[in-house]
Length: 142
Image (cartoon, rainbow, N blue to C red; front, side, top):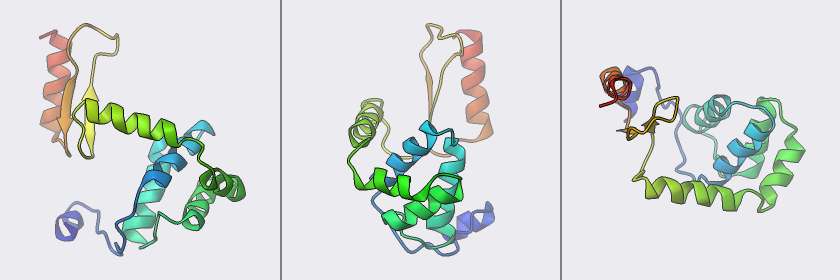
């Protein structure tokens, strides 16, 4: 995986941990509620885990990460020390499993107007052709 990642610009330089991610999911939701994009929070978490070799299961590490994208570290750590948001994360995971999601990335592409067509599903890191085909299928109403 590291070899393939390097070829694609994701070197996984210092990957040391295989963490439990519940706290990461909770931090992402906490940050999003405070205006931090999920792209920014996920990027910070992936960088910490895969490039910096940090244990993102640690509240201290997650507090530092929260601070890196502008959140109050102490507030983030107090949130993580509580059980707040756990039920919502479990519900999201259950919803994903009901949709057949077993890993990431996983994309559900549907029409912007909520049309009656079935959403298209792309499992894994789909190629641009996969996405183009999904968009074309949805736009044609097939």
